[in-house]
Amino acid sequence: MNSVYRSGIACLLILFCAAANAGPDSAHKLVTKECRRIGAKLGSVSYKFCMARDLQPSGGFSVDGAPILIKEYPPLKGRKPLGRVLLIGGFHGDEYSSVSIVFKWMQILDKYHSGLFHWHIVPLLNPDGLLRDHSQRPNADGVDLNRNFPMPDWREATQNYWIKTTHKSPRHYPGPAPLSEPESSWLVHEINAFDPDVIVSVHAPYGLVDYDGPKDAPHKLGRLYLNLLGTYPGSLGNYAGLQKQIPVVTIELPYAGIMPTPKEISQIWKDLVKWLTRHIPSPPMAGKPHQDTEPS
Image (cartoon, rainbow, N blue to C red; front, side, top):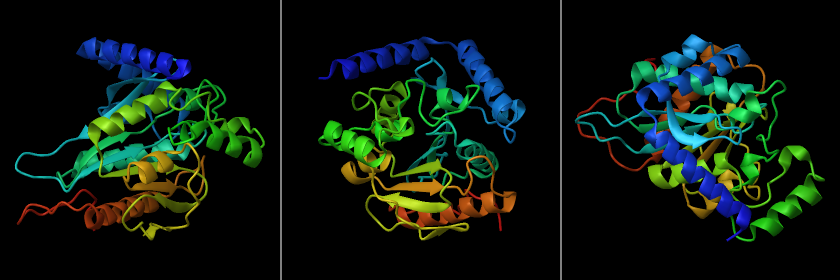
């Protein structure tokens, strides 16, 4: 096993243990600190708005030690959910809107969660990339997290892409080894533990819907239409969509620094929930109305 990978896993396990042993006061302090930083960075997510989402430390940490926060919307008593959905924002630190819109969708779920799905939501996977003076796509190690996931012949495939296609662009550096980064290692742990039926990953600024994996892709979410970008070496779509056969829906918002309108935020969400309802196979409990979106 690669020594960088071993050391990364060892550090991750230490951080998991530290988080597991932290009491509620310590967890609250972690969340409070991160919400203050997020509120100072994002104009559309204030400190109070962030705190109102009741996020929790996931046990994962960034390179610089920032907690990766998560919100669970669990199954409700007497209601079997259709399936499990993992929603991720902030893969890349310079895609502000991908973080903000996930916070807005959590606000919808805080009001309308009915148990239709079991949600795990990570609004900001790459806190070090976002919460620095000059936000950047990669993490604090300069690694593009969306090129750091394992695949057969990882080194050859990612190096060929990075060198020949991007001409060694620092924005797309895949890292020294698969899962060399604590953020990507944590996400693989989360995927294996939660075992989602669908993964939704939010990015910007291509203004489209991308897709990897089995089943039918969503044709349209709001004003964003399906336009397959291809599957890149070391990407989440390659790892989860192709290798693990978990549908990965990638929502590419039109702008990295400008939020969609409230109406569009709502419409993308409604269309996503409709698609999930049709494409996650477990049937709903008979006679139970369901609404994980805003009423029409």
